[in-house]
Image (cartoon, rainbow, N blue to C red; front, side, top):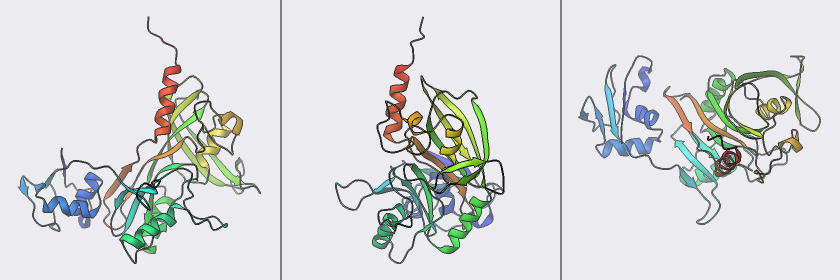
Length: 314
């Protein structure tokens, strides 16, 4: 499959090099981009590129012959349950797919089995001396794409982007009931009680601003598939907003638990998945966006839900 792009003014000058552009265009890590150059699969203005670090100019057309490969699944040992998937990896940061039922980082209880712990074990083995730093978090029962930094400097630069609401964060969720409006925005101030439950308050001084945008993708008999985009990233934000709207995330053990139960969802995890994440690379300034495919549980639920719809054929 041949992919192509053109160097335009929106691409910062430091990012106008072959490796950075290939990483952004294909969603691959630096090593794979380098291998493509060495294999003679990269062309600039119809000429084969032999130098991996050559600079490009405005208007240059880059083409590459590339057959996408599945994300790397990292396991502790052959035959063991997958630990996490690496979607992107370079010397500054990693994007990984977190499985459900796994903490992103330890709580005050100091759990050892966490995503950050698993990634650090892999780095110790594959990239000795490299550390993993948390930039964002996903709830334990949520799966999906997440970014980790490899230095405090990069972590701070990424956190600044999140604080400025720059990253594009898209989730997919299955919620209870039928949502009336096909698109909408939920905005509130989230506070926390003694049991660490989150809830909305009217006093902006008593909570954190939380803004959630959604779009309905499919209506089913007693549930709805929604695409969710976060403007802010507060703990439990999506879960609280939909629960308070009367449409809790299916499988949620904390918010409107009884309403969140569903006959087609027997899993311990939530029906919430961080589907894609886009941001500006803090060092190269290239635009990065990666998608984490739906887990099998979502596909199974959708298939069952579609079968339950009444036959409207004449």
